[in-house]
Image (cartoon, rainbow, N blue to C red):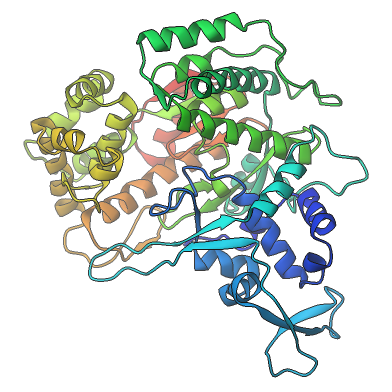
Length: 526
């Protein structure tokens, strides 16, 4: 039920203008749809991140034929223009461009060599015989990367330049109250630039330290880690980057937050994670620049289960520490043990009971203690232990297979995988969801979740996700409808980030009234 329509067809207008100026006729002679398609593709893949990195070619980014169709009208048009060579003829029927893509045998057809602006590094393939499919991989040419870097470098745009996005800012709260779906809705998220500057400065110091000693990782608590902390401490009081003129004082709280750095230091410091966070911050500042520092656009799409996903993962799937810095002074209200609590109440309401449910009730009541114990026993970071529990909640198997969730969450570490798949508590936990699936879904080939969305997927994991995420969306919608304009900063999957403080008990009461679920919300100040 993905409803992307044209919302992934957004790009900074200043980038389109820059590409036209830098590439000249080679770019401007292309049909308008192709120009915009390239601009969007290059904007979304300027950097290789965890979200777009190709699983087989780490130095490449991935994209699907579906995305290419959305951007170029037909994936073959992209392949011909970019890689194979193509034909164009004068466009007499529209003012949208001088030329149109045509067949070799069309009247007035002229051959053009491929642009080679994007290099194909891996030919994708579909799923076969139970093997998962893999998307095609690409690399942006060095010349184009230089043009992109040129464009993103200035702190401010020249006022004569085009700027902005093709967006129509709307209020989430107003739309929800009118019963409108939130799919493809553009929102403007206010950003705390002072805290973001501060955190970027701290990341740059760590990057400088890692690169100067040619280090990939600094393990927490080691002598090297302490030396790095001294390096950061010694640089306090240095300039914190550029000062932004002409920004709206109502948008920026001038007190930076310590929380982002404190969050970063809970784990080992790695060059990769550090670089990824700097990329995310650069992306935020580029979007701010495009909208004259009023905020950044976040658009929500509905995925197949009904969940709200931020287009291109903006903020929603960024590193927590980056989100803390960007939204400093906001408050996150998170559903405590959301899916476990919902599942327990679904089973209780149907009078279903089995011995393993005692373990799930203990988990809901003592989540933090159990997670911490698991983290220590599995010798894995707390956030990885949480992801493993979430995968098992959806019915993932305790399997060593590279095709399974446990392998991915353990990043292929064989020793860690072995500790997970042989852990007796996790085995009992897994059985809960297998039995719950049998009682709630059974052998149905298709069923509707709480939102009325039909699931025709097979497998316990996908079916449980469809079921539970439907109820989760109901809860999130209940809260959205009860809020006022400007209250919400960002939607997460099982949480909402508010621009100010609210009452957790009021949120629980709203949900109880609308959905019947007794759920608890935790509060976290950003």
